[in-house]
Length: 234
Ligand SMILES: [Zn+2]
Image 1: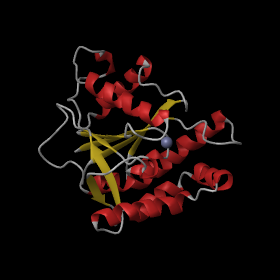
Image 2: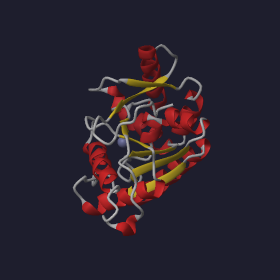
Image 3: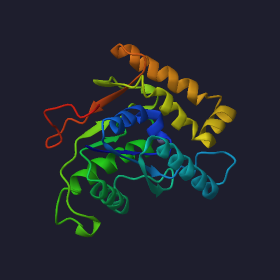
C-alpha cells in the first residue's frame, strides 16, 4: 500500500500518527510524510527564514529514522487557505506524485485554522486529482482516495472509532519527535509545555481506551467514493 500523511507543521506527523506510519512501513507500505507548512512562525526568537531552514532539516532527519519520504509543501505558517487555488494545485501535484491508497490528514475540528485549512486543501485536492482533464500538467489522475483523520491536538473535541496499537513503535516515534528540537525547546522555555511528557501521556491514554500500552486514534471520513470494505490502517 502507498500511504500519505498530509499534515500542517513539520512536527505534526510525530505528534499525531508517526507510530501508525512506522507500523505501515513494517508491513511493507511506502510511506510519504508531507508537511504543507514550513513552520516559519514557530518561535519567539529565531527569525522566520532561519526557522524555516531548521525545521525543514528537523523533519527530514525525523523521517529518515523511519524510512519515510518527507515532502515539504513550504507554505508559510498562518497562510494556509483551502480556497487558495495555488495551494490546491500544490496538493494535487503531491497526491498525483504519491498516488496514495490512503491519506491521513487533520481533523476538521482541530485547534487552529492552519490545521483545518490543511483538511480543506486535502479534501478538495484529493477529489480534483481524480479528474483526468483537470490540470493534467500536475500529473496523471488518481482515484478518489480514502481519508483518515489523525487525532486533534491533545484529543480535544474528538472521539476515536479506530485505534492502532503502537506499543512496539513508541520508542521510535519519540526518537523522531525528539528531532524537532527547536519546538521542544521553545515550548518548554516559553510555554512550560513538556512535549515528550505530553505525547507519552496522550499515547498511553489512547492505549487505555483500546486495551494496549500505547495507541493512536483515528476517524475515517465517511464520504462516497472514499470507502473500502476492508481495514486500511495497520
Ligand atoms: Zn501543527
